[in-house]
Amino acid sequence: MSSDWQSRIRHRREEKDEYFGSNPHSPIPSDERESFDGLSYYPVDEAYRFELPLDEHDDRETVTVGTSTGGEQEYLRWGEFRFEVDGEAVTLQAYKSDPDDDRLWIPFRDATSGEETYGAGRYLDLEAASHRTDEGTWILDLNEAYNPTCAYSEQYECPLPPTENWLDVPIEAGEKAYH
Image (cartoon, rainbow, N blue to C red; front, side, top):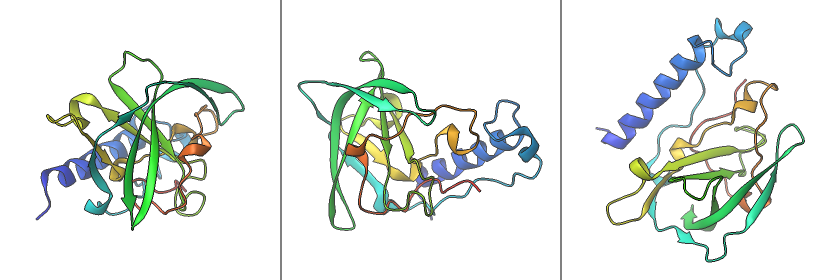
């Protein structure tokens, strides 16, 4: 029997597939929507779900991030999460575009990028309302990793994960490459 969080992830995946296949605002090009039969995902795996403190940086530096179209965007390096994947220590930086926003953005690349997952990397969005526990820790669930819109169409501009979030370990969780 799967737990509630696993059911919620599966349900969100179904909703995303429905949206991507039929909504006029879908990032899937309109000529591909009729044959679209859903995105590809790794199975939901509890080993990629963590409850962690965010080690907030005292000095929140502005980081300039390149984009898929050669542009640049600025973010604040807000804090970092430290954890282990398959016995390897991993650190992921969390960013904010607005210091007053309750949302954390975690772009990353890993050993699956360009092979099983989108080559430019994937994203995680953490919302305080749904990813923050009563104790103040964060739920970092790599099963929620998703592709940026530029993975589906070149008409989108997407920020690229900074090299400090390039991981040597495979993250076999979340969304796979779109073909």
